Length: 183
Image 1 (cartoon, rainbow, N blue to C red):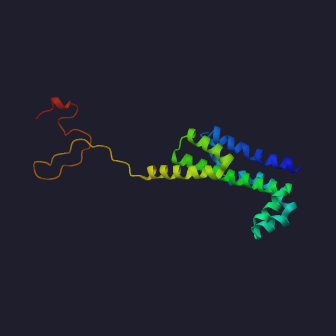
Image 2: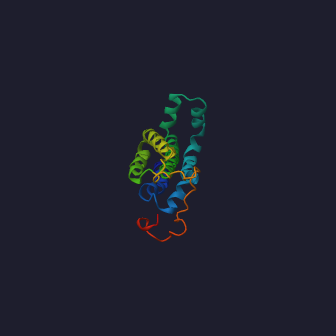
């Protein structure tokens, strides 16, 4: 039973990963990835695996020690619970990366492989994503250059500043091309 639960924990997360990687622009993908509830089925597996070894798990979290942790992971349910927890947190990290990538306009051909890498080694993938995110954020927040304006308007002969152009020609010249206009 423990081996099956170990396998099931990944397969419960797989549909969300597949959507984020292979259908990133599909409307439901964004809604699904925005929900933290996607990890609830994986956390249910975690609870089923963690409850039988709760005393050992409690010892590890209240008295962090490599030997206590090693003792927990030797137990099938202990290792399975840790695995389900990793799957759940990796999925949450992946969902955040997906949403940030979409918000910042990172191309899906960049995000797809990065999300696959997140499934495999999320700490490394996150360390790659963070500088990419920072760079895209800086580009997005950089002030946009104003488009070049036409020739500067000359001050009026009376010394006053010219009135803003309304896009129409002064009365009496409407509809005539500039070369034919009266002088």
